[in-house]
Image (cartoon, rainbow, N blue to C red; front, side):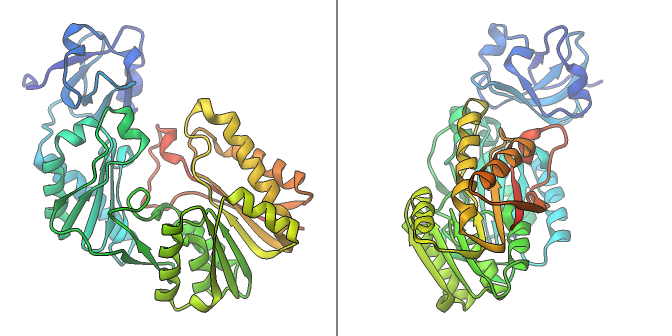
Amino acid sequence: MTPSPYPIVRMRPKTQARAVRHGAPWVFDNELVTDRRTKKLAPGTIALLEDSERKPLAVVAVNPNSRIMARVLDRDAQAVIDGAWLRKGVARALALRERLFEAPFYRLVHAEADGLPGVVIDRFGDAAVIQPNAAWAEGMLEELCAAVVEVTGVKTVLKNAMGRARVLEGLDEENTVLHGVAPVGPVPVPMNGATYMADLMGGQKTGLFYDQRPNHAIAAQLSKGARVLDVFSHVGGFSLACLAHGAESAVAVDGSQAALDLAAEGAVQTGVAERFETRKGDAFDVLTEMGKAGETFDVVICDPPAFAPNKKALEAGLRAYERVARLAAPLVAEGGFLGLCSCSHAADLSKFRTASVRGIGRGGRSAQLIHTGFAGADHPLHPQLAESGYLKSLFFRLV
């Protein structure tokens, strides 16, 4: 075997080298020999990972400052991580999305599940937004940008540096234009028959949440002729899809006026503005006020932020999900539908479902669970990384 050009990092004896051989994408700091040489490696260094018997396992990206100390890039120990390797990875990801979608609006790269650890790329027609959430990707950002441009033909590439993951990797929070010219104003995105307005430069995350696409479609299917309440609405994800499929009316509730303004513009672009209303306020306060006023809706959807972003926050997060369900359930008309969502990977499906059902019961209602949804196929699940299956969506019929 040709000697590797990369420095070597080695797993400790009695650690799970077999897991890496079988596809596990992460190696934690307590699984590696952390001698002086390893600790001095610059964050993002490409290295050859060996087991405790010095047998090659994979080419990895190392960050001595991160709990996830090594991320598997390629299980071929002879792999060279360069522009050609990045182009191959982006092309592989693109081939799946082109099979799934007719229009170029989707998550192009979903991190470990697409073989590019820590890298998230969303595509908005001729523009792409990259979140390089791992040190190796930040270090190769120029080559990554070039690969995206060459493979997809996009005219603009933006860097979004916001998010907890970058902080954990010790990276900056500076958004910038990597290629082309930043779009002037929000970008229209067609999805589920509606038009959404995505603020690529100043919006939340990359500007739009593509992961909820199939769950928007389920809600829309339930909403023909219905009065819809969309809580934690962001730019109108659920409400605009429901209106596009014949909902009688929709109210979008969010704490961000900027997001609600984008939702209102999306309603105009979709041609449903006369049936759409926004209400700014804390979601818990608004739900409480609506309950006291005796308001009811045929379909209520609650899609809150991650209440349990990590294990430490799990119990408090589950209580928050239960509270959402308890406040929302009385607002659903008899025979109507309640959609409850969680994007907290720490709260698995069973725990989230239990909290939701408890909340519905405490809200004085009985329910049938009619659908369990997850992220769309452009957000593939890495079968050995539970964190990549973060999104859960439960649809209940209330009686």
